[in-house]
Image 1: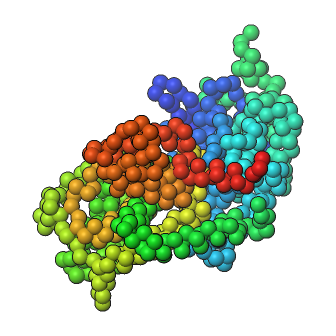
Image 2: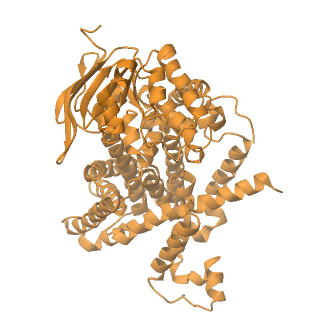
Image 3: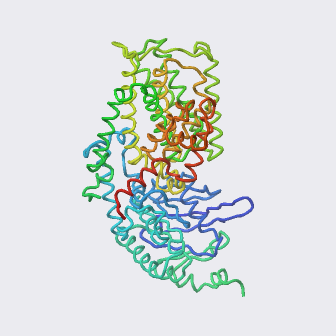
Length: 259
Length: 345
């Protein structure tokens, strides 16, 4: 396993003008792991996700999933490598319903084009079957995440916590093998956070999806992570098990400031 | 409200008896229109042409969120291509019309190139320049009749000619109906959903696997195709074409149709095109237009002899719509529907 890890980030660097957001950051994630990225604000966590996901192109270094190079690909090409993500500041399609938002996650699996769409006139037309089949799949996700009550509501009308879950649903709908969650618990109530922890475990255990998690809530991170990496100023501080990382003096200093 | 029992019912065209009934009424009205309003046949035909343009522009602007203030350029390309192919190359009307649509679509690809890099006001300026450029270029190509234009005689189907006003109306109405249903189905399915996703959050859309460049280009192509087809029909309806028909204010008028009707709604395109075209055609006689005429009389304003006042009215209507009902006429229709459904509460 360690010879051929599921997902590797090798010495990626990214700078914005004079600000170096990531400095030769390397780590790997094994299949089926819940791997957490922690660090103070501005440590480069979200930049890391954006480099993996293709929103930014790293200046140097490489990102590989199952041995395949994905560095510098466009976000939609990265998505085709079965990598999906959520965003720190929810990025839902606000004028669409929960159903349509999650259905958008099925985009890559659907086949309807402009011409077949135009001819969606009877129940057995190609596009109608395509729609029906994938709407059924979306309803499975809606059931899994307890979103039934929000199914046909515009997402902009949903409470913040539900929006976060709907975004998770859309990410799951793409059928990823690797899921990047950017602060999924931020702004949630304790109860919602408990549900989220439960679902994240389920996603890993039942769906077999590997998860990389950015999270500030150390309690939640400790509870569900297999391994943790702590970064600060774009560099790795320490990587290891929950115990190793949370007891590390460098990590404590980064969070609490130097004594 | 009726229960849905199958996922297909979510996307079905005309789900439920009420929708089927109203659509049937609409189709009967469309068929009976030449006999009900013989004096208004030109106006109704022109509305049909503009509905096609508005349908296409709404897919681009309302659904994909890409503004175009140069749509008259696509209409012009469709009109000139159809006319030239029909008159000089003796190609039958249906083939010439489709060729016009396809050529406009190819120009849609050209306009999509800057659109991939520009947003909002910058895209508006680029498309505006495109529309103006097309008009000027067409006026200066030798053989296209310069600023006097070319005259057109009917629709040459190869074996027969359609020259009667009623015949031309039915061709326009039939094509508008087919293209309307197609637009509705595109918007409701995978492609239209991708367009709306790009409009709402392009970052999330691409992270979900949508090729932004590909889908933006596709939206421009569909929109330009609709405009091109409408251009060919407009040429035959008028009986002549010249570059001044494709003035840049005409593009603004198309934009107004979409905004007044309701951004992102197929039914909105229909309502907006009908309302704005009606105002435009009756611009010399605004005092006889319903609602507006009544308001004008109330304020004892007589606009019968004013020229250019239609633009002022269009502008005022646009501002009122944006401020009072951003969903446009379709939004008002929705409110009425909800009111009746929940009446007496």
